[in-house]
Structures are given as C-alpha cells and as structure tokens.
Length: 216
Ligand code: HEC
Image (tube, rainbow, N blue to C red):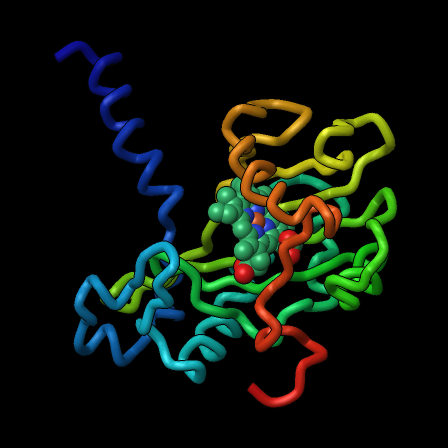
C-alpha cells in the first residue's frame, strides 16, 4: 500500500477517535461495574434512565473542567467566560441518546431568560448556550456538542430574529452557524425553534427544571 494512502487511512481512523475523547476519571462506577442495557440510554422524546440524579450531578461536577476546555477550544472570547454565566436550569438533565445538558445565559441574556415566557425580546449581544456531556451504557463519559444562540445586530437574519444558531464539536470545530459557514448544517435548529417564534425563538426548559421553580 502506498505510504500516502496508509497515512490517509490512519488519519481517518485517528480523527473520529480524537473527537470521542472519554474522560477516564469521570466514568460512572456503577455502570463500569455492570453496564446498563443500551435502551437505558433513551431515545428522542423518551427520557433515558441511565443515571440517577445523584450520578448526574457527580458526573457533571467531574466533567466541568473538560467542558470548559471544549468551550475554550472554540476560540471565541465570549465563550471563554461561560463559567461565570448564570445557569438557567436547575441541574444537568437527561436528554435523548445518553446526553445530559444544562442551559446557561450570559449577563446580557440572563435577566430576560429567567422570566421565561414573560421575558422581553433578547437584546443584541445576548448569548444562551447548552453545555452537554454524554454517558455510554458502560459509564464512560465525554463532552458532547456545544449549542449556541447568539443575538446578532439588526439585519443579520431577520427571518429568525437575527439569532445566530451555532453548533461546535467538543474539540471546538464549528459544525455550522446560521448566517455564516455551513449554514445548511444548522438550519434544523432554527426550524425547530421557530415553533417558539412568539417567544423570540426561545423554547425554555420544562417548568420543573427552571431555576425559579420550587420543589419538583
Ligand atoms: C427538535 C427540536 C430542536 C432542535 C432541532 C434544536 N433544539 Fe434547541 N432546544 C429545543 C428544546 C425543547 C429546548 C428547551 C430546553 C431543553 O428542554 O433542553 C431547546 C433549547 C435550546 C437552547 C437554550 C435556549 C432556549 O431556547 O431555551 C439553545 C441555546 C439551543 N436550544 C440551541 C440549539 C441549536 C444550536 C440547535 C441546532 C444545532 C438546536 N437547538 C436544535 C429543541 C430543539
């Protein structure tokens, strides 16, 4: 086999492996000892039963540094400060396919977001993000994609209230952004969020996960 071809082959094997970096010290001990059936990871619309709330919180605390590194890797000055932003949901919550996520808002967005359906339209500079990690049925945990909604200047894209929807791989690589590069790869974000057009495209976490709700 020619060397160039071999190098290409090795590169294609190595690249996905790099995007799938597990954080060894955050492996969920119970699942490492006895893996859950794959169905426990859940499907779209069906909350997974993979982790208990205590395990979610323990894993989230353990994953914090790795998630920070992901955000830093994007190379956007605003996203580097994400650790100073206010959480907009009570804890990380289970989502589809074994991912766990939590919403955060920057200072320009927090006050309005925390009023949920009653909040005014977001000002320019508002950024709302989702931090997320993923857990395999055998307990291995790794950072998951970064989701961003950033309110741009008037005229950026009026049809979606000038939001920039963007997704990044955990290694910081841009998947796509509305109004910018690889726009087609993130149109589905805007399409689903358009259901909440009346709320400035914000869908909000379920009331029981909101920071202002009492009890559960
Ligand atoms: C199938 C529907 C759907 C798609 C597609 C979707 N989202 Fe969302 N998004 C939601 C829901 C539902 C919430 C509310 C929070 C929750 O329950 O996780 C949300 C919340 C958010 C939030 C927090 C702000 C808010 O609306 O409350 C951000 C940021 C976000 N999504 C970004 C994105 C990005 C970026 C994409 C595309 C890569 C995307 N979303 C694709 C349904 C969707």
